Image (tube, rainbow, N blue to C red; front, side, top):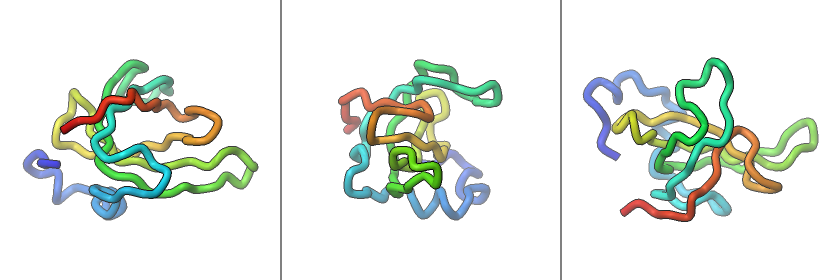
Length: 105
């Protein structure tokens, strides 16, 4: 992933650690994902597309929900800016991402 100028210096260490990481059971690096839901404060609306650049997890919920995977994605409209997002990989998407089944080169 080629970062925009200035992004490396401002990047949170957690995001930096996840870029390029491929967890077992996670969607593969380079997979295309589409946002399904959003909150008022979200930058991207439903339908926005991104590419997976790293994964971490799975994490279990204290409430007993399905395990979540955390991903670093690169949104199509923000190339070179890694963003941390979460998605549930068991029992379907929850926090808004679904894999499109298309891999980036």
